[in-house]
Image (cartoon, rainbow, N blue to C red; front, side, top):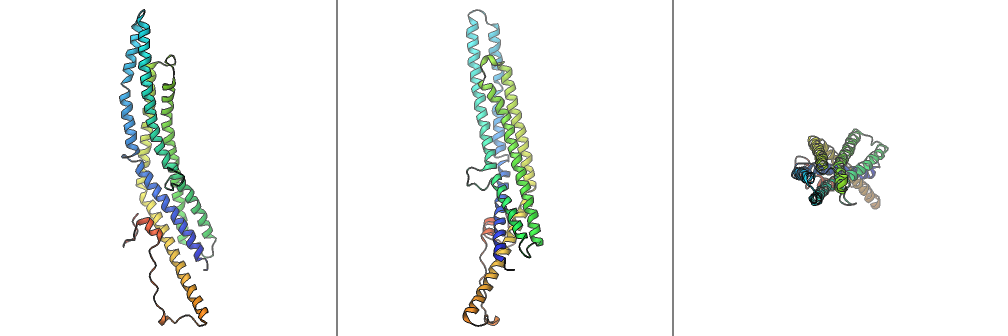
Amino acid sequence: MANEAEYAHYTGQIATAVIEAHATLRSVTYALGDDQIGRMLDSRSEDLATLRRGVDGLAAAEQTVQRAEGAAVAQAEAGLVHTLAAYQGDVEAQSARIGTVQRELGEQRTGTNQQDRHCLQASSQAIESALKNLERIEHLPDRATTDVAKLRSGVEYLKKVVDDVDSRVERMTEQLSGGRQAAYRFHTATPRELQPSADLGRTIGRMEDSIADTRDHARRLHDALGKNSEGFKAVAEFSVEVANGALAEKQHADQEAEQLADAVRAGVNPTARADQHPVAQHAESDLSRRLNGPAHEGGLNL
């Protein structure tokens, strides 16, 4: 076909992008599980449940002010302000801990640094490039095959999944922001701007609601990713299969070209079949190693 090198190059890049996307989805699935972000959110809920006891403490301080008379009023008010400031500090601290969860979610989207390829946005960009490479393949002579069509279907499926997961993780971050905004309004307000015990209770409630909504969202997304993991694996395996086939085809074409060149240089016809020596088996492709470690008999195992 005379386009073996291009075909091998493009399919290799596609397989690399798909492998990275598959690894990203596995990483996100793990991060959203009960042992990771789920545990962090559960801990924040427990902390807020403990903090809620402060509502009664503030209410008692308010009642002390209401009952105070004469010179005792100033002392009671000072005690209320002091108690309120302590709980404002506690709310601020809890908000910062929720921010840690937000950063963890953000890293699933954007990575820990610019070179991090196992994050949702980097995977989306890589798959977008893979789709462009598929278009280039489809314009090569005799390459718009059934396998290429199947590969396109799989890559488009992964693109949709990665973008949907990215959007849902972003929404989780926004849900937590709602609780943190309520916390900010409480811990930055002056005593005169607050109904201390009532506002503390409302603030904790909004923070608890944002955590509960995020926890539920994370659990449902984790379960959905786990349920579809075999589909992601199948796309990755097939992309490597196509890339390995293209590489073998290119190597065969290179071998034939080399034999022809040797024959031309020697000024004779190519070596007779009976005198040809078998070519050593090609080494396992780098893609297969990345997908599965060393090759195992019986197929790939992501």
